[in-house]
Image (cartoon, rainbow, N blue to C red; front, side):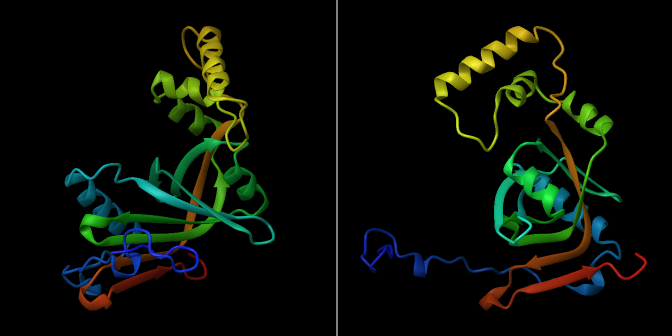
Length: 214
């Protein structure tokens, strides 16, 4: 077994042969919900019922105004008829990119179920009241970290970051307010794609697209 490195030099495991065989049942269009949000919730609940770690984990893809992409993992914090919500530092790279190019794609992947869901759409800022309400539910140490972290920017050292956290804890001995530079976004879906892994790589995909007028 070998890894293909630069110059095709074998150094470890051969990534060309790493694969999983899928033996999942077919994704039958007649069994899918008419509403893609309802179908998404069904799949999310099935993943959660199996005890999968962080079934609400998702990849968020954004891009600059000139189309330079970036992607990262974060957690879904709301899914309803208005869209899919998440929260972040408003000075982070993802927030800056969404400000100049308010479109995004989400990817949920539940490996043990051989399933993934892709969601694409426009993005809007959540009202401050929604950000306040969610921030109040976070553990205290998470709230303090939101104040201490200069997300997407270099820090002098880990020790300096931890010192900043201690300063914030002393500043807010009781209730921790939401930082003005921390808030939420909502992806308003225009397209869903449900993917089910199948044998021989003949996977099933069923897509929902928003028509003119909704």
